[in-house]
Amino acid sequence: MNHFQEDLQAIFEEMVGWRRYLHQNPELSYHEYQTAEFVANHLRSWDIEVRTGVGGNGVVGFLRGGGEGPTVALRADMDALPIQDEKKSCAYASTKDGIMHACGHDAHTSTLLGIAKVASQHRAELKGNLVFLFQHAEEISPGGADSMIKAGALDGVDAVFGVHLWTPFPVGHVYTRAGAFMAAPDEFTIRIQGKGGHGGLPHQTIDSVYVASQVVVNLQSIVSRQVDPVEPCVVSIGSFHGGSSFNVIAESSVLNGTVRTFNPELRQDVKARIERIVEATAEMSQATFELNYKFGYPTVINDAGEAERFYKVGSALFGAESVHESPLIMAGEDFSYYLQERPGCFMFVGAGNVENGIIYPHHHPKFDIDERSMLNAAKLLIGMALDYMA
Picture 1 (tube, helix red, strand yellow):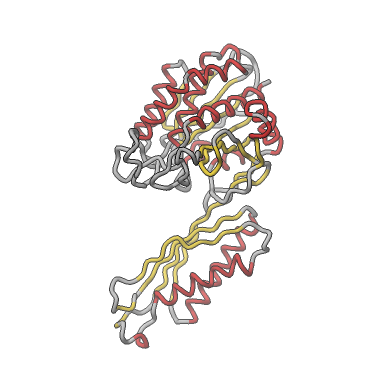
Picture 2 (cartoon, rainbow, N blue to C red):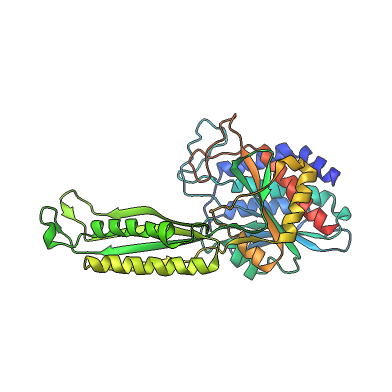
């Protein structure tokens, strides 16, 4: 494994260059046309078999090794977010207004490209095959993983591994956990329909803002009073829109929120409780409502054996003191779909650096990473694949 690690080190600056180019040229979910072309052209230049348009804008590379053995898939996501880049003092800031890589997918793509280049140079030594999954649309449900799987991206694959660079964790450290790891993220929209009227004559109206406000308060009782305190669960309202003038009672108001759970039974129960609370709260004020509840990605559940492999490989690469069991992560990830189909492990690689000011969370306008994390991620991913093949 040592020469793989050494060769990754040798092309690190090239990986950084790819990442900065992609950071300057981000593309939103389902619009990753130039990014997909960028990836496919590089894979072809290294004589790797390429499929494009896989389940949408997905790109799949296949590298046949020199020896008989298993086929291991490694995954990177490619899409950016509708966020204005505020790193204007940075030489590689986004050149597209309102779009930026605020989650690290540019670095994930560049990391996997680095692995593909090095692996192509050592294909004769591989005791099996590598599949490189460059996935579109991770940021928007239903996401690209499910459609890529349906298009055959995992055909012939025995195991699958993925990483996420994570700024809340310090660079140089790696994390995962066996079993449930990342939450199932659901989304709901509630429209409260009242009766509009003059702000000075509230008795002649049904105030949708008032009713919606009561819904917000009442929904907080789900986690605080209706769910077992030791069971991880989040119910959050992210947006509230109602009214247009100071002296007009709003005819309707709209709430948008999210539910995060790990337990499938609790997931269904919370949905039912939201429905009952909204119905009862609206009825109390003679308002009506519409509730649209959308189930998002499944929970990310790591294979226990592959999580153990992470601890072994990670300790050999970075030292046992840098390898950690992660806390549960309430963010969601459609890597969960791959893990429903094949054994594997999703891992976090620390990308934060307080001393260098790399402190902003994911999906923040000033998000950035310590780019050394890309090299760590590449070493970990190829290390997992090679150990699986051994």
